[in-house]
Image (cartoon, rainbow, N blue to C red):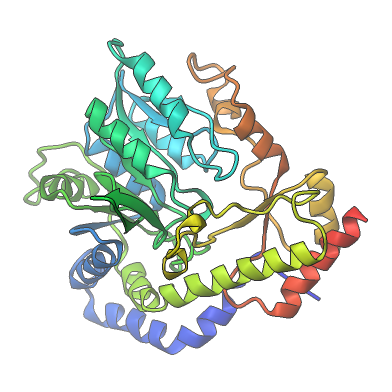
Length: 394
């Protein structure tokens, strides 16, 4: 049996005619840069995330870069973030001239530890190189613990940029007036940054991204910055970049957005099936540590996407040998991520970044493994994955 890590063909087969109509419509319009198709999709994403504005950009990486630039993050500034995520989180900070300030992650969620963030922010008070932003990552499709981070943001008057590249539609329970209100990723900080890379739950047919915000002035700055800082044309009040969302990508993503909730539900169902199968196989906790759905403790959690499973990541001993075993049995897997950001060669000589130690993140990098989780997987395929893993550890 073949179980790829991701197979986009079943999704494409269902939507092929509608996607081709949308692409043909853009081609026939001859309006290929921004325009009403992009604006429509921006409005759809803003509504979906519970924000007022969406600003389409060319990739998730450029979403982060534009969000930082639009807060005037630059030389001498510092940005608090996690060492355990995709490179773009650190790369965009460095490209502005700022320096990332890492804090370790929580063992259960893989996301930044708010307690350590609080300690780091307290230590930074009065520094000549202030921390100018907090950049949590909603890794694998589950929101970081935003309540304490929002409290820290308010306490220190530091804005939060949410790296929600893997988490569009993921929900977080915020307390308000003694009750719980679920908020979607990208709606809690000043900005939410999304990626529409093809492997994402909402993926395009190429690169694409979005920044969401409910701050009107900030949204205007974002629009300037994605278009060379020009407003009006040929008049440049800022130094921006060419970060525009491609119109064809917007058209395709608008088609797909209507199906996103259904795909989230299918991924959550697959995750629940994995949990049952691993439990029945006697593999849970030893040797297989399953993903922790941190916000599943809330009574109404099943009504909300407390985890959208962009990846289904387990932690296991002998990870590399298991991955080879899976590949030999035609099962796809991936390591997200084999190195922490502070361990990357490109920062090995940078003071304040290299030679740091984040034990929980480093342990995750050595033991984590992503299994197939895409919506169209069959029950037989899921059973085969778990059976193959059981055979490895017997």
